[in-house]
Length: 418
Image 1 (cartoon, rainbow, N blue to C red):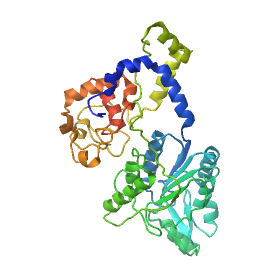
Image 2: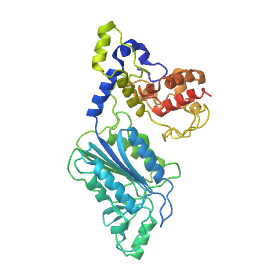
Image 3: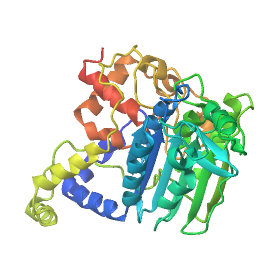
Image 4: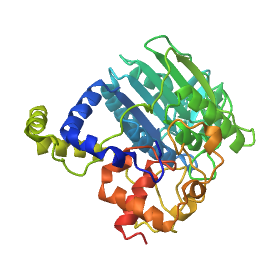
């Protein structure tokens, strides 16, 4: 099925109309009932009070929180938190995560290890004496305990190996031995379907904060976490390769994995029917019997239809900026892979995802978007108008440039395709 200009829904419109949105409402209800429950804690600290500020952690954590929401995680997040604020946020997460199918923790900011134990540093940490670790830092083990209660799968991502001047203060002033900015290996306990712990750098080594919008590790993680039908272990292999290349071999992420099942955060059934995107509930075909059958399946009629549409609309991702969209102006999509590029630039580039479901990557990865289907501004405007008129159609299929590109096209059309 094509992900480009051809819309397969048009070929089976009568079938979709005969089903109606009442059936879709029931399908969405059943899907929600059987879905995995996913809960994430996301923390990012940049504005340290007793150490130089870090450029990227809050941006890294903010982008990760949005990405996880798009992957159906309930997200508990906090940025530039003090120790007391951090404890309160962890307490909220501890209550929410109990019994989750997948528990996830992401942290970006300063961290350190002391004699094999890892600590994360809130923004008010000073580390002036030997009691500082107990009262100012947050043990990683403490957070791991909170996310291990009655959970099946635990995923931990620590971008916390940056060069940390507070380590030297702790060593010199407090005489603490074995303190290091690099984090120590975390042993994995048995339980549930297992655990993955991913570090931005190998044990005892430092990671770069990066000179771009995100750190090398967070940038690669944002690019690969939740790729369609890609397991989390394969995603981490891709993250490691990207970071190693981006840092000229100076930084190598490292993972400790003990998963007893394959974890895929974005599953797509290539044989499943497409999502219905009708703008309003169509009249059932086939006379009074068909109409009565539809009414019996949906006693509340249009109310159920509207509910189904609202559920779909809640899944449509939002752009990071409310600015008007222009064909040749940079766009803040909220997706690091395409942020800062215009529609005109992106359609001259390469696709991020297959243009046809199930197509081998070797066939399409070196192609250019405009060459595959002769995209130009006029043809693209017609497609964009369809997305603007029928907003939930952006969810029908993954787009070669990502779903947020579809959202931007719809907004561009609403502004007159300027």
